[in-house]
Length: 333
Picture (cartoon, rainbow, N blue to C red):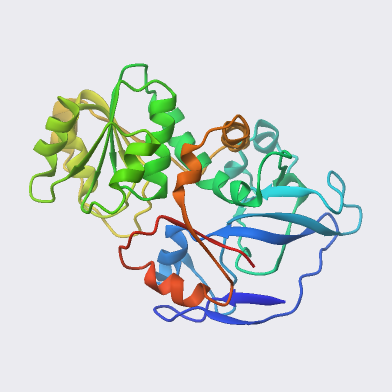
């Protein structure tokens, strides 16, 4: 099959032929219809902390058609269209039964979407309703990540919400915050690339002021935020978020940062700020994201700005390491 593979850190991905996957007992093969390029994929090729090895196939935001079943694999049949939950789990333990698969003892991350075919397990496959497309199935994962952060935040109707970062997770967070009753939503970034998209997806105001981010966000919201969602993952933004949240407010970390950061605890303690970290999502949240699309939500589909071929993926992937007008790029293998 054709696939795009990791070579080594700081080097472009390679478009090549690799052996077709064969499902083991209890597994199945999905013909990938669409796969999103995630910001974490970009980081994986630049940071040794992720542990990528030569030949690895990235891609965890994908949907497709079931084309082969391993021995004794049940729950799906050939021809089913599914969105793949990229969190490996046993499917049987207490955490899995609750849908909290990220705490399963057999937890691992599912890749393989940058290819024509990928092996996965039936408990990771969520059937796509007939009204949804494979492109819809490929954006459910980032929507679920954002929804998990919102659910952990304790947001109440009428709250002032500040989202730091206008990438797909930040924009999805703005969507859910407005959908769940936030009084005012501000998205703050260092560039205006996603301003119109942010406003269409639920933001009331878009703030760009790298020189004075704290005061400009306060002016945009009409005061300090009740909740700040940090959706970037670079050092210094936790400290900024603490300055931007009200006393006894909440800062939620959704941005994945692998570099050390300095947290000024005195400022946090002085304001009694609650710092909440958000890891992945639950299966019910994944299903809720799918249900929102199935119910006709248009805004999340605005995340998708381009669809490319596997052959074009290495070049486009490199270009996405620099800020552009692109938001969520999908691969159509």
